[in-house]
Image (tube, rainbow, N blue to C red):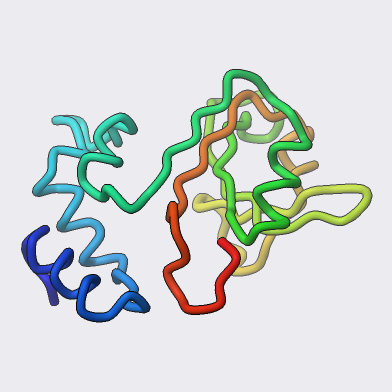
Length: 141
């Protein structure tokens, strides 16, 4: 397990295909001030914690942006309302077909994707964090 940002950067330099685990990422975010005192992510600090990532913050909602991310293997997080009219909530868009998006909902008991229609198919904002350069040889992302 890597505990320091410098250790991660050194490991990535030695092996460009190295992938950060979720535990390492959480520890790195904690060390670099990505979380505020309430535990929320300060998105402006993500790039300073990992200079190899790009942070996209949509200025509106555009399905072509979501489709473009998905076509490149990037998975946007979108803001929806629970049940379509409840509290604001974030879900991860993982796929689409010609009629709908599918998403992973951290509040769901299901371990498979649920249709965005579960949230009335209404998206209020889009975010995406992704690697600027390929993390695996031959990758297009």
